[in-house]
Length: 144
Image (tube, rainbow, N blue to C red; front, side, top):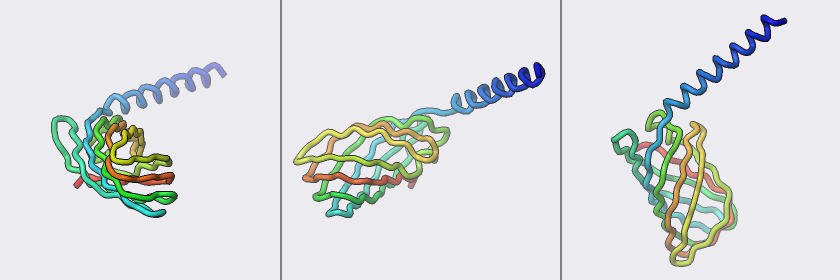
């Protein structure tokens, strides 16, 4: 019994060490994204951006769909950080969000999103245009 307990503790320690090493390899980058959104019930968004990671810049393509109460059009310019990526391609993926918002001429936006690779986007920005939304939306980012 005592040997099984020691073995179990040893395996847990090894798992913690390996998990810690994989997180230690993760790094942060910065992101600038420009998104255009328009819709009436169904909405769509498209845009572009740049990821700066480990001294290099990577162009990004942005796209997405939304469903719910959406009416109007807007442009949002985001900037911020992407955390927990090991390589630039980890930013690629689908980021899901449910939310509500409104902008008439100008409005502030703050967003924290995660994709299937574990990348975490922490973005702030300013929205211009006239749009009201209460929707579920998905944002897809990919390297160009």
